Length: 506
Image (tube, rainbow, N blue to C red):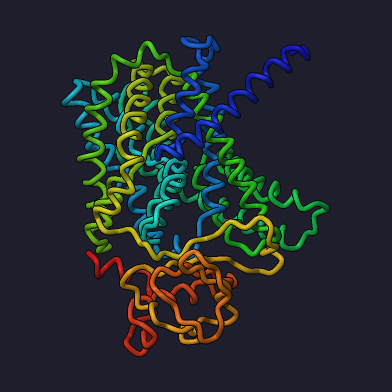
């Protein structure tokens, strides 16, 4: 490559990056998932429009897999372990048994509706059965949902990539006969077990190293943290285990360890995650041939309807019924099974393996993802309101770049006092928040005041609280308890458990 070629490559790459960032802002304002406009940027830059040629499925598979690893590391780093821990079992069942149910129902629909042979139908079912971590993380974290619902969907999307990759690889490399359930189950157990062990071990090793080794520059801590997640992914892959589960678990361990410069690490991880998403979706947009897509609209809609209206609800019902999850939450979880980059990346696997009809599968999957993302993504807020799952008074994290909260070992939260909350009429001292939690500001009717010991809270107030990671959960529980039963909540048997509201509202 000459210097002139380098300049041209950087010019094109930088322009595409800036166009994608502008697309992300446009998508956010329009209430659409960013992946749609990223894919559109790739299609526009591609051979049929602006003329950039790219049809290397093997390179797309390799780069796409690496990008997914980065996205999963970022997802783990930004997930809250206490919320995930209590949902490990239902999330694990959804990510394994739920995938099996979804694959079976979707494959049956593709076989009977489209006339696909069972091999291709099972491949298609496996490819589209995984919810997408990037789409789920991006969309759900801006909705005021019960933490249980958000955490369950995030954990499922972090875990279910591994089983689907194993299924797709097994079906793609099957030359004559489709592998039996026992063979697939054996591969699944090995890959998940070894990947989980490596991810947890490398995450704990990384956390210990970063706590005890003083690095010469602050910027090296975020690099090292993400680096440990990538090492976990690569180590698991080298051991023929699941790199995806290893990457997510390593990120989860590192993100919840008390490491130096946590805010900087999280910001860096989010930036790297966005870069991976942009590169991934633009590349996948480049890979498809727009002239081939119209012919696959009918099959994509048919398979998507089977997936959305039958396969996903049945898998959620079968997996979550034993856990007594309220039907409203089950309905939302069924509707929020977003698809994104993962199915499109997985669709490159059969192309690389030379499976007959694989290119058509890629086109069907691409159209399916685009159409149903347009349908599902913008409808999630309305679905949450319809199912009465939104929480107007939910506590929210605040991203603060100028305050040295890492050095103070502090968390900054806000809480709104909605209509009907028993926080109305309670004085600050009557909250009895765990020390050292304090209410530092109140915004009331557009005016900001510093509250005193006897300040009485009113409906519509916005409170700014500072707490520490050690007592944050206790502070949240106390605020929920008082909001439900008033200042005597504890005497009335209310302790602010996150599940209480969700169960009583079902």
